[in-house]
Image (cartoon, rainbow, N blue to C red; front, side):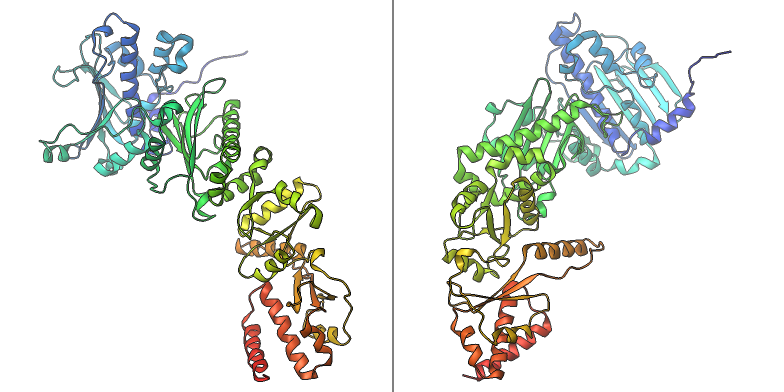
Length: 613
């Protein structure tokens, strides 16, 4: 026989669970209680605007939430002058776990437009977060309707008492939540700790919030009413056309405490089919590693939720700084984690598109200004392209490369100028100083070289090679361009043998008549070998086991047009050996740093050669 029923949970069993595990961080209790207070004010303001028979006589001004600390009494009190509650409403919304007064209000007064109500709360559990830090909680409330004030007192085991409230104990209108802080929550009885939590979670809540410390109040009796700790109309809620550049910069400094001016910003304002607001800033980057330490603050109806939630902000945009307010986010009860939703992925795609559009617009409308900040943007853009092929496709036209000789160019501009001399080959340097000799040889032939001097640059180059068929990035010390070679090259008898004694077995020796007669020899390491070496170094730096080492493919090119190389065949064997060794060591020096033994031998040989003069 079938039996059906519902699982019953007694309050004495569920209450400790709610108290201990409802939220991931205890400090969230203040956010939840202050959010409820803001909702109480917002509800009353809405009734006033709707012309409610009772509410319409209440002045639509002077609304506030006050957070008070009494260290001696060990209480934290949150008071609002909003809608308040009757005894019946206290029994309905406070005594029944998970019944949301916010949802009831929206259904009754807002209909289908509830999403625009400005009411923060959607869950009925927020109030109970007070018990995470309290042994007892008092609710003293007086409804705007003029009903008698009510007092509700509940202990941490869930036992409550509802009683009449003395007129002078309850607020004139609204609600006071008095939290008697338990031993486990005494860390929050510090003025500094409460201010920090309020500034973190409540900085943009829609009702003015004031903080009162009993000790501070006594010390500053003559002082004027303090300013609210929050900004009720943050810049991101305004229309972009109503905001000035100075306001954007000031907002950035206030929110992120970064006094370097941002490079630029994007003001996001989406209404349909999405609904969110925000401002994303591109910080001034001083190193490629600092750029990975951005901060995008996520808000839900002006309530801080979290930093850098990757489901909303693509990973490669987390290096930016900014704020996003998404009132339709499908959050769970704690508001700290997202539930699966197509809405979230649409927001992420929209943000990506807006960032790409901004970059392209800046490039097209004011290229000199864009080039001026490209060094700060480059790491971010390249990382974005590596992480998201769609982002690469949208920004490919505005990707710049710095030229060793100065200035910038796009990939297409470089390939077009190189079409006749080295089609589809892109020559670059990783270090303008150590590779200066190679760079000068290329420039002497009118070949532009690009500067790829960051770790991420080589990975980005490989991405382009995979996207652009036939295109090759070749470092200046990996290959000589054909235009750098002259005619009539022939092996000089006996010279190859001198160098074969010096070079590793896998190094090939070639003779070429270079147009630059001042260079005796050039050592080239193949691009594939060098990339493999770089990859193994990266693995080692990360503490991982690197792949097995591969033989380095290198070529020593001896310049037959150079008098020194030509004279080695007829020189004294001892001198020829010393000079050839010195030439090879100079070639090594142009490729890498010498180890201690190589440097010691190089100095000794140099002194010996000087002694021959």
